[in-house]
Each structure stands twice: as C-alpha cells, then as structure tokens.
Length: 160
Image (cartoon, rainbow, N blue to C red):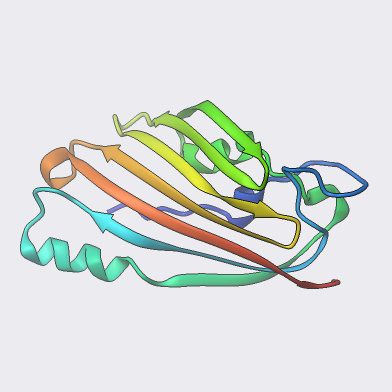
C-alpha cells in the first residue's frame, strides 16, 4: 500500500507578500502544524484489511516550523503539487474568502490511479484547519476504490 505523504508547508502554501494578512495569508512566526488521517475506508476490503486501514487513521503528526514573511500565503497550486506524486493534477474551483477555504482538484497518476479531492476549512492569521477528503480509484485496491480524509491544523505559537 502506497503511503500518502503531504508536506505540511504545502498545505499552507508559500508565496511572497507583505503588510497586514489578506484572506489567504497567515502571520509569520513559529507555527505548530499537525496532520493526520482521520478516515481510511476501502469498500470491498476484508475484515482484516479493514482493521489494518482503521489502524492507519487517527495518528496525528506534528511539527513546529518558522514561517517567514515571504512564506505566509496559501497557494492552491502548491497544494496540487503536493498531491501529484508523479501524476497530473488539475485545480477546480478554489475560494478563499471571509476566513473560509473551499476547493477541489482532480489528479491522475501514470499507474492509472485517479483521485477527486475536496478541501474545506478555515484560515485565520493565527490558525487554520482543513479537511482534505479524497475519493480514489485504483485497480490494485479491493473493490477498486478508497476514501481518505486528512485533517490539517496549524496554530501560531509566537515569534521565531
């Protein structure tokens, strides 16, 4: 089973900017960022496989990182790059307004895997929270499909 790895920095995006935070920006400083799978379902999996997948969900990984003034803008294109994993992603509608994130993309990899990704969440200057839900189709999976949800959170702790 292929691991799903998404760099935390890609989930906040990186781009140059200055001044007061805009709708798509966070404050520079020391940030604690956490990400983890909260749901991993494979219709058609055996009970043993389902138990293994259930065990994969629930673990949150955290890291602290210093976000500089030129790394504080949320960029959907960098998020698509994080999902590519050797394939091709197309960004659909993406809206960042009034502290809300709403977007989608579709990805295809050379091995025939296709994924539809929906992103919802909130983005404030000192915190963010996102739910990334992926519906994946891959011939190697039992039943050919999987549903994965990853939760991502960030909180500004102070200055670097």
